[in-house]
Image (cartoon, rainbow, N blue to C red; front, top):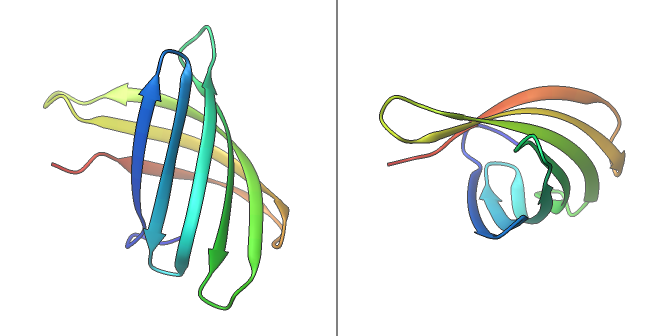
Length: 94
């Protein structure tokens, strides 16, 4: 994923789902459960620009910015297709 990856999220009650594309991602999906502390327990999968199917899991904490947008602080790790783990910040666009 890169700075050119765009995510679209939806939420009903304590279930969040979404899709993402762009950068090195041809198409991806996310499903998450909202925890009692309002964090997100997420699973993701995508096909990248070289045709590799990758999956992973992520723990996200939401921050509401002064202008009302949401910023997600994420800790993630790959479960197939790639190796490694890391941290990312995903910020809502206007």
